[in-house]
Length: 175
Length: 282
Image (cartoon, rainbow over all chains, first blue to last red; front, side, top):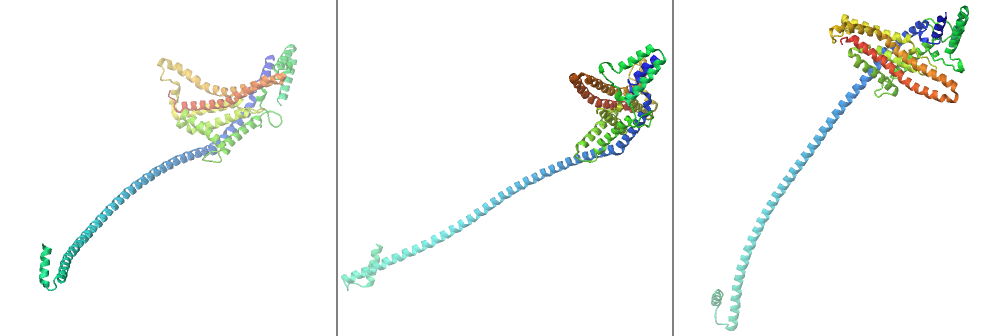
């Protein structure tokens, strides 16, 4: 009896965990709880979260691939730009060289033409100078003759004829 | 209700004592009083928080009676539902805070199953997730003052542990046939030692559900009881109660840790046992 009493005192307020009369109740509700949580998780929560995680992984992979692609495009664009720049520079140089050559040719042409003109004009002028010189010699002859005739006429109005005067002048001028 | 029950037991004791020897009866009654800490007004009932009682009315507890066990297990279901279903309902690529927690939990347990038990154990992932979420939710709900901690009861943890034990044993034999017995035959040990090791392995295999269940219930129960004891001290110390209150705060912090760690330990041991069942060779 005394043993019974101490046991009773120990189990009732002591360890409710060892009160076997409550075990069926706890186990019943535990099984229901576990089944409900299992159904919630396996039917709704876990597939949904798994899908979200997979989708996120896919999005990240796609984004990285897209970024990679854009980077490659940017590099290609830069290369094309550099190439265009180099082409333009080469073309500009070619145009400049061509223009320079053209100008040089034009210049040579114009110089040659001017030289020819100048030499033609010089020849013409030389001819006219010769002509003028010849004219001047003739004029000196005539003036000398006229002057001589005048002097003769004044000094000896009847002394000689024109022909002898002319011959005398010519002889003097030549002498 | 709990007080009533105790009164009732006391009454019965008294009657029994009167029927028998009076001196012994007086002793026993005094002992019972001392056990209740009647001296100096010190009233500590650290185990009262674990009493299973009907929510509505009185009477015997049959298996379907709605008790505080029912209430707190249903709250655990609600907690799991809120965390895992409502938390993830946005299905956002950039998760909200609740969704992050749900995803972290998912990733945590999934990685544990994969790393510890192997890829072929992922078929059991929902089951292990159920165990983890139930235990962790029950443990944390149990930390609410005046709540009831379902995982502090050996009946609950023993059922969980036995379920794991039976699952593991059945899976082991279904997947490996008689080869599952190789788990007990340590082929790397010297031949004369093997029978002895086989006996030790066999015993340790059957002790698994015991340690598995008592570890969880014991840890949770001990912490809660310690808090209650300190709370009882605080009740009679007056201004000096600051010391027990500080102690309760410290123990409570420890209990928060224990609540998670014990759920983690239970889950990872389940994974370890599962690995033994799937790959029994040493």
